[in-house]
Image (cartoon, rainbow, N blue to C red; front, side):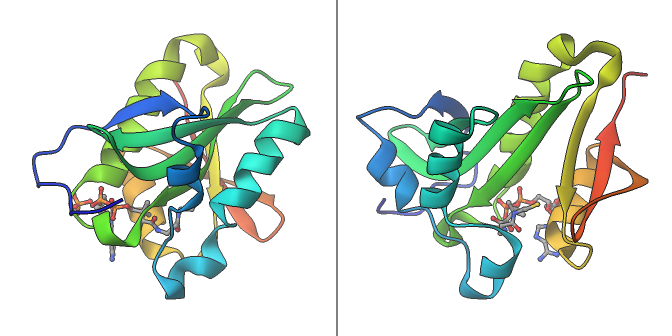
Length: 153
Ligand SMILES: CC(C)(COP(=O)(O)OP(=O)(O)OC[C@H]1O[C@@H](n2cnc3c(N)ncnc32)[C@H](O)[C@@H]1OP(=O)(O)O)[C@@H](O)C(=O)NCCC(=O)NCCS
């Protein structure tokens, strides 16, 4: 991970494999954001051993700028988790693109069950981003986190 991506960068979601896992493991939020997410190394282990989540690298060209994972709940709802944009790349629309791309990918498969995610209630950037994409808080909790869902129209 080197130079900052330009403002008009287009994000692609790419499988994590032997060619890029080190770059995914190097993705870091800002220090003050570490309480909102686990380390990407932890997420990669969760995906590998946990049998629920699937990892994706967020790439701009050859560069890994972030991480996200997805999973399917018993009720068919498709969950987005583990979103991190590397500190060096935040604030230029990449996080929004990551979530938009994942919504596009999962919307059809999720059907009526819709999409879901959760976040710490005081995570203002995440909460604002998800709300702007149509996620609505349902009153459900997942541990300390609030759950928001995006249901089909
Ligand atoms: C949340 C996160 C992924 C956003 O990534 P990003 O690339 O910086 O976000 P973007 O530049 O695409 O901004 C998207 C939207 O997020 C919101 N946002 C981003 N930073 C914000 C801030 N400091 N305050 C309020 N809203 C903010 C805005 O709604 C913004 O949309 P806008 O630019 O149209 O106003 C990033 O801050 C991050 O990695 N945080 C640490 C990990 C984390 O908290 N992940 C979420 C766990 S649920």
